[in-house]
Amino acid sequence: MATDTLQEFRLPDVGEGLTEAEIVAWRVAVGDEIAVNDVLVDIETAKSIVELPSPYAGRVAELLVAEGDTVAVGTPIVRISGPGESASGPTGEVAADEAPVDSPLDGEASVDSARADRPQVLVGYGPSQRRRRSRSGRREHHRPARSVRVLAKPPVRKLAKDLGIDLATVPCDGPVVTRDDVLRHRSRLMQAEPAPASAAGSSATSVPVTGVRRATAEAMIASSSIPQATEWVTVDVTRTVELVERLRADRRFEGVKVTPTLVAARAVCLALRRTPDLHAKWRETTIEHPESVGLGIATATPRGLVVPVVRDADRLDLRGLGEAIADLVSTARAGRIQPEQLSGGTFSLTNVGVFGVDGGAPILPPDQSGILSLGQVAKRPWVVGDEVVARWVTTLAVTFDHRVADGEQASHFLADVAAILEDPALAVAF
Picture 1 (cartoon, rainbow, N blue to C red):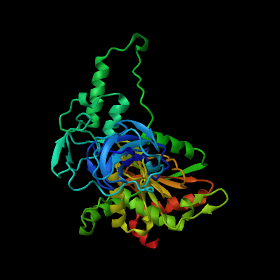
Picture 2: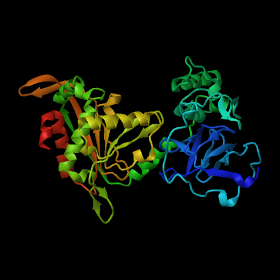
Picture 3: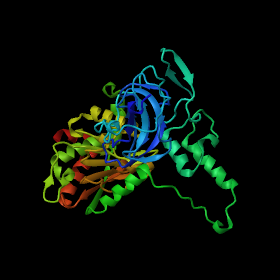
Picture 4: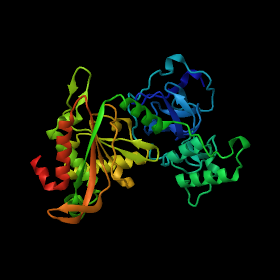
């Protein structure tokens, strides 16, 4: 086979200013027949796990990087022979005029899933055997060049890699190795190994700063250059809690996760109509006012904190907003959030109350001018008239960019959100 029939696919920038990515799991093996847009590999960027589709049809000739490797954008990662060509021929040199310098993906992070005739595999798992089609069209079994993979989700694989643990050595009760399995195994290893004399009395460990943690650190450093101020208020949200209970029983909200956070998200969108400065953007010589609200939802995931964005959140009704938030959160926690879903935010909402704390001063995401923190909703003594009664109470805190807004605007915004949560019926006035 002539070497100039090979196509070389290089790691692309998937649309988030990517400079490097980790190869999480190959979805093909040498000898596999593939079509254009078949998924080749799962990569882990600073924010998400992304499927890379093939720009070429043919057979996989060579996998140039191994799972677990971190490679720079532009690095050749796989060679693909033309349709009908054998994948067992020479793979050393690729014609310069056929090696693409830029990705043919044009910034698309993912496309159609693998062909229906290929076994569907949960990302990061990889099958123990793969199939290929012979020249006659008959399917044959063959083992991939790599060893059989242990079942574990990508965040668990990453944790094990960062801790220097071989997943194959981790005991587990079920078919899939979990985060808890890895941590328990690590604890057993630390207890079994005596500390060297020079490290007596020290239990410190080092974990590489990668992925979401590095992205979060960089975002916080960028945020530190913004002059920020925080205001807070404690509010009686008993009527919101009652509304939540009614909506949960309402057939029109069947399948929607209705929570006080959802009502708070709607209250934020309504309040921003009256105080648009709280989601304006500082542009040095101008202040930009977006036409709609891109509502960021701070989400804790196994990989760290990410903030997916509900586009045009102020144009959605309560049910639509609930569906959009649930979809983004589940996608983020599964490690499948895409770069475009993390951009376009104008204001963010974070619920620290889910961790059992009363409240906190949130930090602005870069390029946003406001973020609201919702503390835990708990029953507390509350003065109603001349009596002290038990009421559902929470603490709201808003942090804002003092370049685009002052305490007056922030106070009006916070008061509006608090008023809606205290009496959701007031939402009709907004």
